[in-house]
Length: 409
Ligand code: HEM
Image (tube, rainbow, N blue to C red; front, top):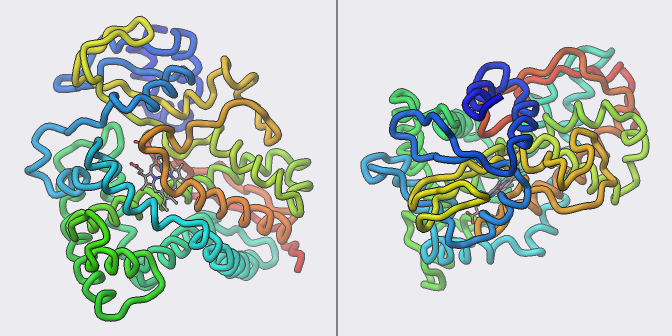
C-alpha cells in the first residue's frame, strides 16, 4: 500500500472507526513519509508516526506552530492565536508562565476531594439508573459529567452553564478535526468563539466583584494587581482553550479506557487497592487509545527530516497515537500491559507545549477507575461502542454498559 492509499484509508469511515491498521501500515514505510498527492492549499507535506522522530520534532523549539493564513479575519482563529496552545515563543512562554503558576501541587491536592465527591455522585447515578441490570450510557452518566464538573469547579464555571457551554465546545472541536474546515463549521466555530468571549467577559466582571477560590478569581486578581504579563483578552482566549483542551480529552480517556480494562478481568480484579496498578492502567489506556491523535509542526527552514525534504513553513503531521504504537519502542504494541516499562507515551505531547493539565487528568483516572470497578464488579459493555467520528480527537461517545444488578457498598 502506498502512502496516498494509507491516508485515503485513514480518512475513510472505516479508518475513523479503527485507524490502527493504517498506522501500522505507515510504520512499515518508516518513521516519516512524504505525502505524494496533496489536496489543493494543503500545507502538510509529510506524515510521521515513528516514536523517535515525532518525539524529536516536538522537543525541538524551532519547529513551530506557525499561523494559519487569514487568521485575523476569523473570531475563532483570533482566539486561538492569542492563546498559549497555538502560539510560539515569546508569546507562548509569557502566557504559559501565567497559567503554569496556577497549576500548583496545593491546587491539585485540593482537587482530590472534589474528584472523589463528583465520582461518587456519578456512581450513585449509575447504581440508580442501572438498577436490576438495566443498560446505562457510561458516557452520559460518567465519562462526560466527571471531567466537566471537576473542571468547572477548578476553573470556576457555574455548573448550570455546562450544557450551553458544551454545545460551543462541540462546534470548536468539529472545526479542529482534520476534515473540519468547511464554511459551515468555520461559521459555527466563529459563533462559538464570539459567544464564549462574551460569556467570559461577564464572568470575569462577576469574579472581580465577588472573588472565590477558583482559577478565574485568582487570575483576575493577578491581572488587576499588575503581577502578570497578560491582557484581559488574552486571559479570555486562554480560558476558552484551556477548558476545551481539558474536557473532551478526559471524557475519552474514560470512555476509550473502560472497554480496554473490561477486556482484562485479571487487571480489573486487582485494581481496587493497588495504586501503582491504577497509575499503570491510566498510562496504558492513554498510550493505546490516545484521545488526541494528531499534532502538527511547521519547519523553521528548508530541511530534511528522516530522509524526507520539508520546505520552510510546511507542516509535518505528527501522529502521536501512531507513535504510541510504534513497535520499535513498544514491543507487541497492540497488547494492553499496565506494567509495561519503556518510554512515556506521547498522549500529552512533549516539549514546549506539553499538556498543562496532564496531572489533573491522570489524577481523575487514578481515583475514578478503581472506585468504579470496585463498586460494580460485574460491569459489562452491552453493545458495540459508537465513536464520535473525529480523527483528531478520537473517542467513544456512546457506551452502553450494565452493572449486572450487582453493586458493592
Ligand atoms: C486525558 C486528557 C488529556 C489529553 C490526552 C491531553 C492532551 C494534550 C496534548 C497532546 C497537548 C499538546 C498540544 C501540542 O503540543 O500542540 C495538550 C496541551 C494542553 N493541554 Fe492537555 N490533554 C488532556 C487534559 C488536559 C486538561 C485536564 C487540561 C487543563 C486542566 C489541559 C490543558 C492543556 C493546555 C492548556 C495545553 C496547551 C499547553 C501549551 O500549549 O503550552 N489538558 N494536551
